Length: 259
Image 1 (cartoon, rainbow, N blue to C red):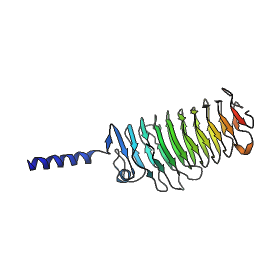
Image 2: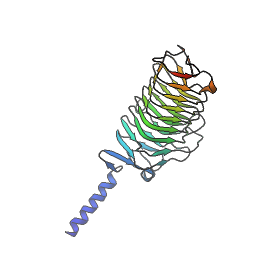
Image 3: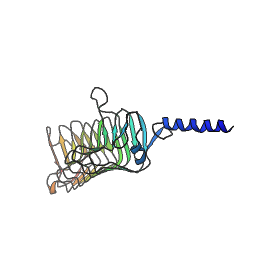
Image 4: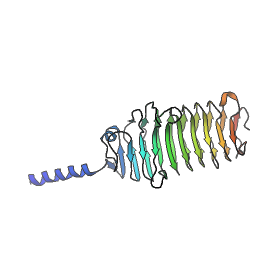
């Protein structure tokens, strides 16, 4: 009997070692110690960045603090969901491009697609104008986030950014092409509030006190039900190129007047 118990303990230990990261209900759990240990998914080396090379759900169980010159999390596969679970991914001032969450190329140079990031804070990923809170690929969903004090808060394409606070970023709050931005607070960014492209819809946001225009539209976009005020030092609140001014989809409230 003692030998059987010993064998069972040994087998359990080997199984734990073979598991890339602790998983609960199909979610892989992440904290600082696990990132430092490495082995979260195949190809993940000890320390930052944490590399997620398998699709699925990942949840933070503690704050993550990346050192200078390092990304927080790199996503190397499609269909990854990252639930920050109320915790923070923070970085340090850097001289090279860094990101809190970065979508990597996945075969043929296509960036990791269908990334979802939610429920937490990303801050401090700044390298002049070239750091990112979240640099997503196509078809991302970013929701219920606080993205504060990076170079650029969010960069994405054909994605949805909603119910988030995007503030105090050094260059722009959001840069998004073909996106839906809705129900966000975009404020106190040291550049544009949001830079959007062809086909964007900007709906129901509070865009306030950004250094330049609250909304810059490159191409044909639509905006409605937004409050834009105290951007651009009290000058025009909306700017753009191409078909400008962008057509309001519904009345907005601007101070001064909307174009």
